[in-house]
Length: 214
Image (tube, rainbow, N blue to C red; front, side, top):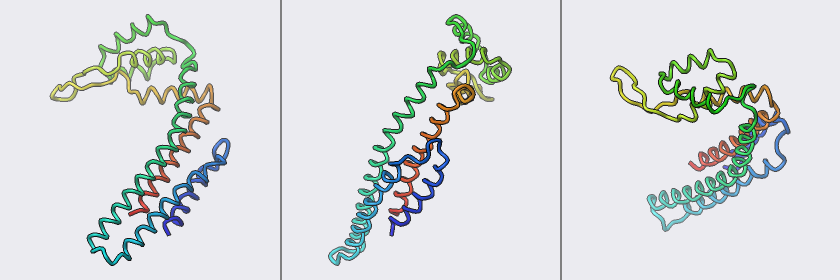
């Protein structure tokens, strides 16, 4: 039965969450089990279609495909509903961390604008090298300046083509901030990571359920 296969997926994912800071959330197993009735309904519909003597082989194939599409839509609705709540939680946690002191030294508006002018003139690779050699305070200034600038057109490659690029990689900025936050507020960063792991389980379980429909 499809529900038995789904249960195996659920067991694996819940076991992987046992090392969460607060353990597996009490209501999570029940939420994941909400997918089981969708698979049960699909199995019942498929069995009914396959036994219908009034349908041709093509008709059965089409009817089963329709039932599969309907079940997949239900699974997607479940995923959207379940991830909406935890997405709001993750967003709130991220905003709280963003409001925290990003560095030991807070740059002035003048320093940020001055740095923005410098970064704009440099090649992004040059900015990456400067960022690597900078102090924490200088890095914070460069991060804020890069975000203020946004993407700008830069010449790239042998053909000297224009391409939109950031002065500093947003991924590198995000990683640097997480590292600073992990050092100064490890509890909050750990809670954010746990929330993301739980969200990933919702997504993984919905994907597994859709795969079982095939």
